[in-house]
Image 1 (cartoon, rainbow, N blue to C red):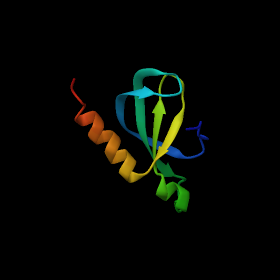
Image 2 (spheres, rainbow, N blue to C red):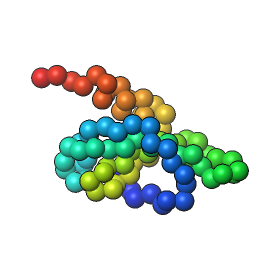
Image 3 (cartoon, helix red, strand yellow):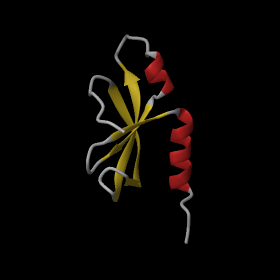
Image 4 (cartoon, rainbow, N blue to C red):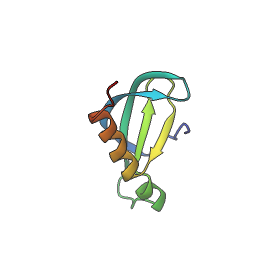
Length: 82
């Protein structure tokens, strides 16, 4: 997890309530997608990890692969019940 530079354009795909390990709270996270720079081809790093999960409380960002993004969306769509 790290704070990402703001060079790349992003699009928010979803807002999710998840636990943040950094600030140890359950709160809103944004699932964003890198859009890259206008007119420039996406770098291999952006293509491999094109999704970012950002904690609204502390701002920490975690880059995700396509599979990790699907797992997060599946988990939030089908939460575990006690």
